[in-house]
Image (cartoon, rainbow, N blue to C red; front, top):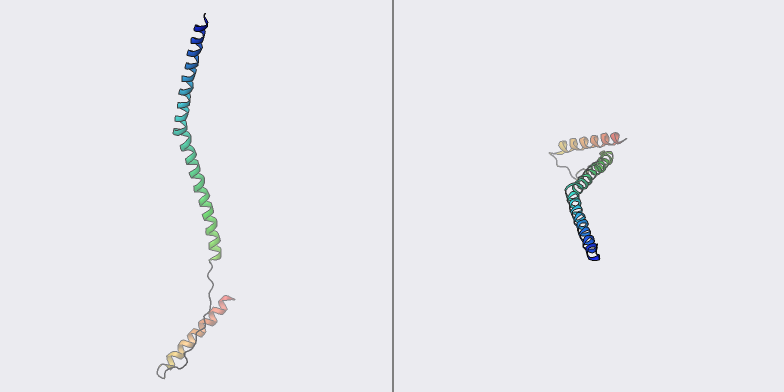
Length: 109
């Protein structure tokens, strides 16, 4: 075997191996796009979904604990000069608002 034949054989062997590597890389790239990227994206979406649900649940429980309404008694200020014909009605309104304020103060205790 001559030196030229050995070089030609080596060159064909290297070309064959290079083509095989190109085909393998092309197949691997296709697998990456078809299988691995959707799998990773789906897993990230599920992790984000469950983490978001957990965070929202914690926020809801904290807001429910602090959202207990407190009743505040607001005193009413009587009008400075009641009218003669509305004096009885104004007196009843004052008595009613005073009763509400007392009930509210008892409820706060």
